[in-house]
Amino acid sequence: MKRQAYQSMKTMFDLNRRDFVKVTGAAGAGVLLGTPKLWAEGDEKKDESKSPEKPATNIEDALKHPRTEFSLPGKFPGRVIQVSNEAALKDDTPDTEVVNTMFEQGIKELTGADLEKSFHLLFDKDDIVGIKINPVGGKLICTRPEVVESVIAWLVSNGLPRENIIIWDRFDYMMGESGYTAERFPGIGIESLQTLDEKAFEPESTDDSGWLDEHGNHLSLDKFDNDAYYWADVEAPQDKNYLHQHVYNNKYSYFGKLLSNKLTKIINIPVFKNTGNGISMATKNMGYGAICNTGRLHQPLFFDVCVEVLAFPLIRDKMVLNITDGLRGQYDGGPDLNAEYVYDYNTLFFATDPFASDRVCHEILLNKRKEMGVKVNEHPRYTKYFEYAEELGLGIGQLEKIEHIIV
Image (cartoon, rainbow, N blue to C red; front, top):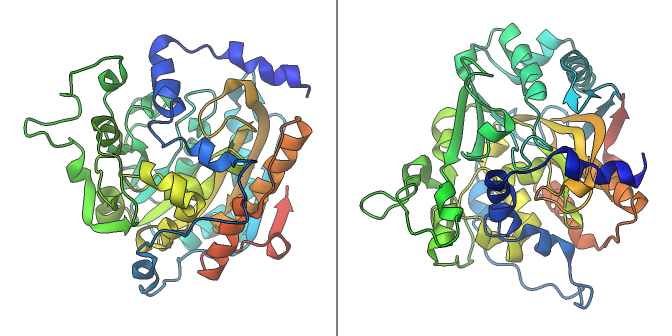
């Protein structure tokens, strides 16, 4: 496909002012996520062999907990299944039957079993299953509802009640825009870890009633567990803008109570896209999506967060399946939406090991960036965290050890 086909995405999906504020005014301005794209791009003038000293974290607290049979890297360490079908997207809309066939192929190839046996390898009928999506790119590039519907159909057909399934993300305001509504998913829970107030993004807004209570506390305080946290010796900005978007501005990033008090299993469905010279897929979708107060972490810890947060039992022992949604991909301008670089990829990736999956996807996206003429930086710092994950026993990080099967 020629470059012009990708450029056309800009006009195919026009953003109105309200959407622009949501997709670019918050995340694109770097306020929401702490300009992660900049931290991942690197500075050519900087001596990258001299890395600053890593801030202290409480990673040892995570590692002291005993592992379970479901702990990362899961039932199939280092195994990554790539399923592609050029008919997956038709007239810019996923073909439900094709997507469902791709899903079934991927699950069977990953587990070596039929759909029923595959379910029982990973789940119990009494589980409360959380499906973590990524809705940041709106309807253009997000976790597609059609993929989630295939997952739900599989779970329900094997005896899991619909009320035991919760589709979730960190921020509330993006989910509905990407198609995650009660009308589309009847009987399925749809939850967020925190609220964001649209009015707060408006220029010169002074109305904080959409995110502060009468005592001046963030309305989402009670959605985070003060007994379950990722601590890093990194100061947070103290301004109101930061507090609105991150709930806390101390040195603690608390896990959502949804993970600590409710979910027993997690299915992670990220999107296939870059973040500067790195990627923003399975490990980042969870590493920065399960906790609050993350903006402060990007510059000093960036990719290490994707390892260390996943080392905590709330994720390590519950996240049993990762399905990277590559029906559409974005090869540059990420992790924010940049329609100029979005393209149809018609691919899904399956793994219990999120680090093996991301390592394979990193290489694929790197080659895509080169193919499209993007200037890339292949410094080891963009892949070193895969080795770190392997050292901690969370996944397989070396390409030569990964079993990558293309269907």
